[in-house]
Image 1 (tube, rainbow, N blue to C red):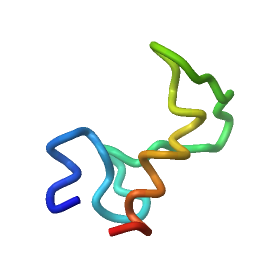
Image 2: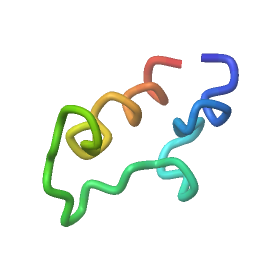
Image 3: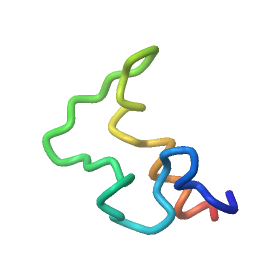
Image 4: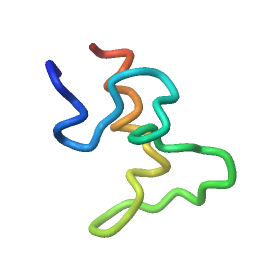
Amino acid sequence: MQNPNSFGNPRFYFQSNYWKNIIGCVPKGGVGGNDYCGVHSNSGVQNK
C-alpha cells in the first residue's frame, strides 16, 4: 500500500498510467483477464 505504482496499481484516482478505465470495458476475470475492469486494483486508492 505504500507504493502501489511499483506493482502496477494506481496511487491516485484516475491516474492515467495505472488507473483501469471502465468506460467501454468488458469485464473478464481469470488468468489474462482485466481484473473485471480494474475493480480490485482501482479500489486500492480508496483503501489507502
